[in-house]
Structure formats: structure tokens, C-alpha cells
Image (cartoon, rainbow, N blue to C red):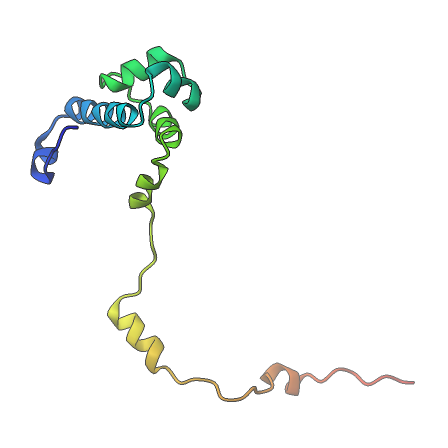
Length: 119
């Protein structure tokens, strides 16, 4: 498989990056001892589409996801998951904010009591 450092990736053309993705898929296909026809069938695509992808000619993100799923490598997409993180300041505010120790009636309940029944 092609080993590209971060700096090299930044300088690489889009076409070179597509070839890298294709080489990645081909490497894992061969590692799993699958033919192009077999992987294409598992991914729900035609063999020629897989061949184009492996050569860096097919730019469909959907095809890439289908191939990752068929190769059981979908967990690689977790890198793109957005995780909500608190800043240190927000965390400190949460830790040192006063904690409620008892429940209290709301002001609206005491000002507007329910009308008493005539019964």
C-alpha cells in the first residue's frame, strides 16, 4: 500500500489522492483474498466500477462507502464524526456552579392559584 505522510498528502494533487484511495481498497481486497468480481458483488456495484475506483478514476463517495462496508472497514469513517467537547472554561463552570439541594415552588403557581370550585 502507498505510504503517504501528512506533508506529502497536502502537496498531492486530487488525482494522486484518488489513486491513493484506489490503492487502499485494492490492498485490502487482496489482503482479504477477494477477486474484483467478488468484492464488486458484495458491494453492490459492477466489476468495472471497482476497477475504475482502484485505478483512481472513479470519484464517487458512495462507491467508496460501499467498498468500505464490503471490506468491513467502515469504522475508518469514525474519524469524521463530530464530537461535542466542552472547553476547560465551560467544564469549570459546570463543576463549580451551585447545585440544587431542594425543590422549590415556581413563582407562577403562587401568584395565580387555581380558581376554587363552587361545589
